[in-house]
Length: 312
View 1 (cartoon, rainbow, N blue to C red):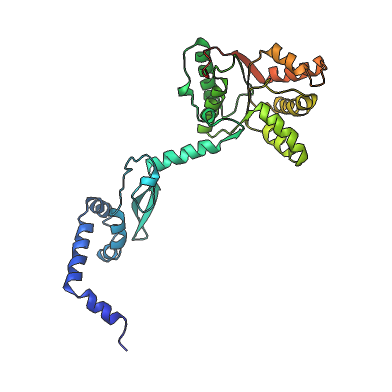
View 2 (tube, rainbow, N blue to C red):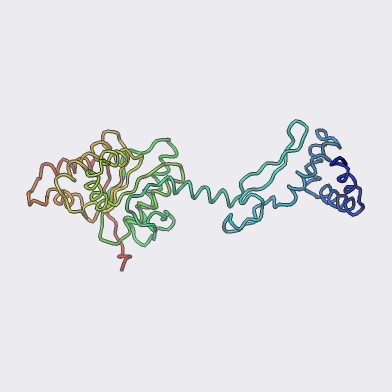
């Protein structure tokens, strides 16, 4: 029986094969990127090592080594989409590594930012907002943008989150929710996690959570968030239970732990206090509402937001 390497040797010795091999070998070794690499490591690589690593060098030159600038890595033509090949010498042999291209880095950063923002019942357009997108058409908007930027700057400079957030109030549709989304994205870009909550839906979910025994878990998730953003406080139908057991618990914990809290509302402080004093049963509970407002005021700085209704 003929040994298996017999036909292989004869095939290699066929002139057409030898010609193709020599042509490919010459293309590899004459490639400027390969020549630059070999020149930089001339004292580390022998002739035999280079010959043995021709397949790796061919893999290297068969791909782009600079980001092609496509809009998404799915369009990448490299073997590993979004990765660029690089060569290095390890123990006198050639190794090929793959590193992320610029587009891949951008996509991963966007994904990281998205993962740093937990949303409960918030619309997508709000969660995609940035400080740069804020329409600066009113003095109050300029101040809000400056304060948001200062909050991020202080966090970066001190390595700690400021204990106090903002209470943004103003008419319906002026962009209060948009500010929360923009600030959440700015914080996400520096790896600070936020939980952004639409209050009316959240309180309804808390009622349902009693039945499926997830109330404490969901309440802890919100009250312990590194940064909590409560959108549209005051738009909900208030009950004594949601006020005292849910909002009261959240605000008390965050005040005690000095965790920054941001709130938007159509109400001023005193109007919100009046709203919190009402109950479905028609009772007026001024003392309990006042207790909640003490915590809100301790947690936030009030800022009135003006502007046109952008939903009309």
